[in-house]
Length: 299
Ligand SMILES: Nc1ncnc2c1ncn2[C@@H]1O[C@H](COP(=O)(O)OP(=O)(O)OP(=O)(O)O)[C@@H](O)[C@H]1O
Ligand SMILES: [Mg+2]
Image (cartoon, rainbow, N blue to C red; front, side, top):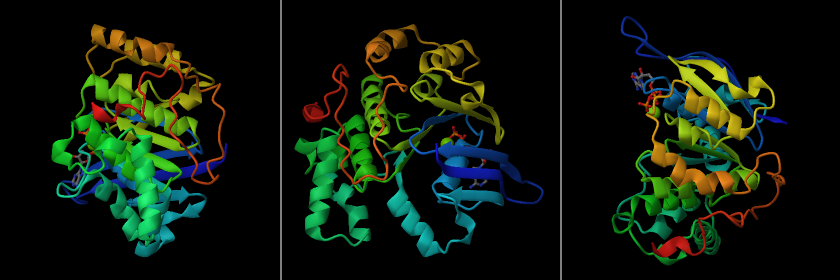
């Protein structure tokens, strides 16, 4: 698997001096194309700091970040901004939509920054909203939509330009279990269609959706399931549910997710599409997947 992201010995120190906080402490991590990685850790462990580094939103105090083999620290601000626009789709816990713009306009905005024509923007924005099942909500403002719908708008915004990497920081943190399931299904589908998906969470059950789980504590990586050989997803889920998770075990959760576990999603059976292929990834949920992205716009 080609190494898409390579972090070596990265440190991030806030407020250097007496009150310094070592938010990342010699972190080394490499992530290949088309991986689905969960970065998990307690509050304050350094997850968002790591996400900010991965997304080129902040610069490390020391260490190396190679993205597609090139050293990010050598890039100019303009080049970094290009990378953010073209390579990475961001999804945040708080959706980060612009309140006075419609769903369509929110998705269109980054495409304006990219200098696309109105015609291209309209095509891409409509297509992205259709993919997350919101074709009937294009003219709605965020305040007129549920949290789950707003997060789907944010996902549409993130995927409109088909970036190879999706970086999601607690994307379901503000959502109920139904919307959480929808969002996770969308992320799984994006992964199955060739994207690299990196999700940051403090929730073990959310992390169990990923194929690889990286634990971070006090700014250090304390475990990485990719070092444990060929662990399958169910084993990972079992392992972390039995482990010392931050989330209290909720017996209802299993019932809610039962269908998920029975769905034919299997990381080993997914036919990978070439991530560098043209932007033809279409969010077609698997047959038994109980979110229908195309019909779900009205709820
Ligand atoms: N801008 C900042 N200035 C100073 N300290 C910071 C800053 N941002 C984060 N920190 C500190 O760095 C550490 C890691 O913070 P970070 O936001 O990465 O944690 P997190 O794992 O994302 O937590 P949460 O789950 O609560 O979002 C914390 O101790 C935090 O207080
Ligand atoms: Mg955080």
